[in-house]
Amino acid sequence: MLQTVHLDTFLSRYNGLMNKLTTITPPRRLRMRAALRQAIDLRVKKGMTIAAACEEAGMSPQGFHKAVKRPEVRDYVQKVQLEFIASVESEKSIYKARAYEVGMDLMLNSKSETVRARMVEFFAGDGKASPVSVHVDARHGAGYEYVRPDQQVVEIQPGKRVAQQELGSDTAKNCTPPIEGD
Image 1 (cartoon, helix red, strand yellow):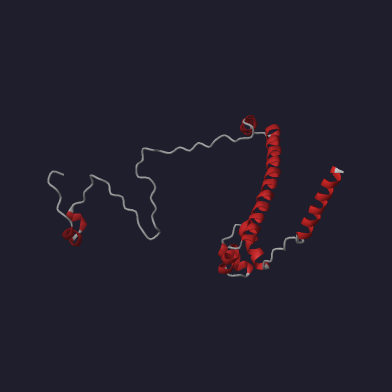
Image 2 (cartoon, one colour; image 1 turned 60 degrees about the horizontal axis):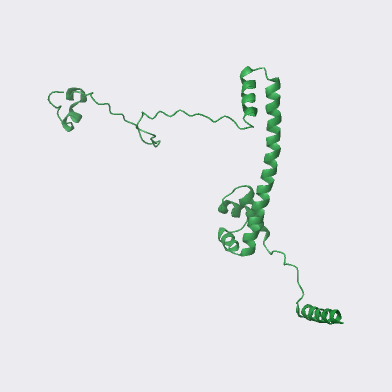
């Protein structure tokens, strides 16, 4: 009898809760213009700028920025990004496997001794290529210098003087006289 009371109590409470629940509706399909979807796809999958993607999709960049503020659109962008990353990762593994096959073929069948040796080094290092060494001359203190196309580079070498007579009359007036003892 005791069990029956507890079961009856449970069933009445359960039915009461079920009546109070509203019907669960499936989530609405995201309403988004086709142009916005295309702009998002171009931005994510082709790496286009927002302006270029919007222009090709036929929408304004302002509309794109306004739409991306909506949480459901941000979720869609994230979903497209994750799908793109997953597809790139799957392609990467296929290309990596093919690269190992080509490397093995080179190691076994190459006529060049150096190519075979490099492939042996490659596979001995668990498929990691040897690091590239770059020589940088640290004694040269000038560094890099960018010269615009409309400019000229003038190098001034110490210790060389030109006599005023060689410069001509116009430039000789504007030059300082040579220092005594030079």
